[in-house]
Image 1 (tube, rainbow, N blue to C red):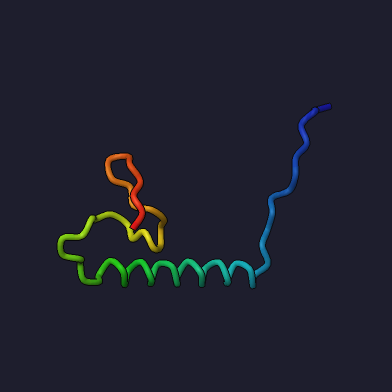
Image 2: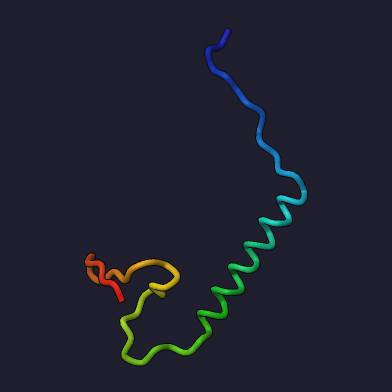
Length: 64
């Protein structure tokens, strides 16, 4: 007899799988559009703080 309890793998409903796939596609499209956008001249670089949080430069966080 084993002390290990096993649970069956969790399955998602087809509607939930479609919703997750659609959300991933929307995120990919937003990231693609942001990547092809115009670069800021003299900007700080890095990810957009409005979307991803504060700027981090050399380990220091700076608000905008």
